[in-house]
Length: 299
Image (cartoon, rainbow, N blue to C red; front, side, top):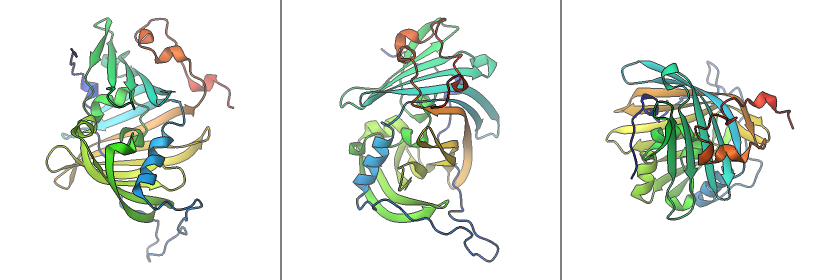
């Protein structure tokens, strides 16, 4: 039996403000940057693109501090600062996070087993200091998963190509990156429940399969989610965003949005395996909360 808890910090809204400029132009409308062109062979099917997105997230382990600024429908702003990490476990993933700020949520921790195996459910545990124990919670949508995620936007979308029907919409250029545009539609209600998202459009970098922009119909009526990645750069051989934004749109109007900024992000630096076990969650001697990536020499 799951014990359901409802923390204010768990109410993170998943959606993203659409950006209007897919290319840079001057006052006369001339493009300032020449259109980018793919250097790899252009894929012909949406299935190939989706498998590229899927396989991308099986290729690395990660750690970062994430600064969150969450603006709700009333205009109220909340901030969060967490450490978030993930480690591959075969075709599955283990995710870990620790809340630093705000003070009322300090030291809330999470551990997630993110399953890619058919018939094996994802599982999420929270450690709440006031309860002095680990509590297993349901993970029914994107907002419930953010504490445990490595928070790459695409990580939350297509985990397995088999979970979606798709259609290739073509190639284009977005923010001077060559992209594939594909339409995707989840095949099962379980996948809808996992994200709270239904069908939508995904724009994917042709070279790295990083999802750059996506717009989805939400499970709620007349509601859309838009997700974008910003300030892309190479870190430890991984192409990843330094900043990303998630927003909710209702009846054509942005009603809430969240900005995420990463600090000290690193990939494949050999994080201790014991950090990614349920036994380490809430353990006073755990080194996870005090770790900083600057303590590891670049390699």
